[in-house]
Amino acid sequence: MSESVLKSLSGPVVLLGCGKMGSAMLEGWLKLGLPADKAAVLDPNLTAESASALAAKGVLVNPAHAVIAAPSVLLLAVKPQVAPEALPAVAALVKPGTLVVSVMAGRTMAFMGNIFGADAAIVRSIPNTPAAIGRGVSVAVPSPGVTQAQKDITAALLGAIGIVEWVDDEALMDAATAVSGSGPAYAFLLAEVMAQAGAAAGLPADLSARIARATVAGAGALMDQSDLSAATLRQNVTSPGGTTAAALAVLMDEGRGFPPLMVEAVAAATRRGKELAG
Ligand SMILES: NC(=O)C1=CN([C@@H]2O[C@H](COP(=O)(O)OP(=O)(O)OC[C@H]3O[C@@H](n4cnc5c(N)ncnc54)[C@H](O)[C@@H]3O)[C@@H](O)[C@H]2O)C=CC1
Ligand SMILES: O=C(O)[C@@H]1CCC=N1
Image (cartoon, rainbow, N blue to C red):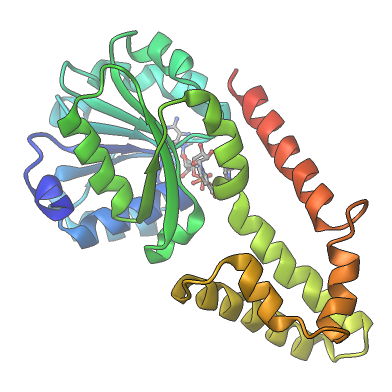
């Protein structure tokens, strides 16, 4: 279904901003069967190397706007901070029937509606970087003008890089961004601080970094393949009176452990999302 949706688009998919997130998505779309000549990238800062690699695949690189008139999709993957100048510059590309999909943190439907028109079909979404290996998580909310066919197109584009969760309430997006959008950083930080703690406990630093990284990756893979809850998987590691219980007494401390710390961290990210709304 996703494959046929991407193959049968009437106009191009125009990607505004081909950085970490945009390039991961583009790769996923091409893999899933979006014809390369139906993909166009607008990014003034592409290196000559990445521009020629994209062109070699058949992707349109910084084409004149006349070449990409009436796109099926305009996907916004620039930083929220550059949106006030970058989005108006492409507003004329949005025609009746063009779906605008944003992956920008913070930027609201109202902000985009001011630029593309109050009736524009807009999906506000937030993916995450495991998209680069097809294991992304995206949360998405449609504007009232989005048709079922456009929801299917969005599901195909975001589904090409992982799983998609739809929500009806845009107010949930900043908290979703704080959990799944930013969340991979929390898991990577866990590997970093475990490595540092192992070194502090006497392990050679390189050995500690290797086993910490592999442990976080292995735990994620186990959670992925298991039907058990995260809590049960944790309990399965924890022998009564054993080493894990000693560590978890610190990490799960209700005053200074992970639970209150993560509530504080997610609240900070959620607040920052609201600030970026502009
Ligand atoms: N990196 C992440 O983990 C996630 C990022 N996002 C969102 O994705 C968006 C992009 O983030 P990244 O890919 O991390 O940033 P990035 O800095 O890697 O990519 C941004 C791209 O936009 C390009 N750009 C700058 N000005 C432009 C303009 N006027 N027109 C066209 N392109 C322009 C830059 O050259 C760059 O390639 C942001 O809005 C961010 O909130 C969303 C979820 C996760
Ligand atoms: O840090 C950020 O603002 C972006 C959005 C979610 C992940 N990276």
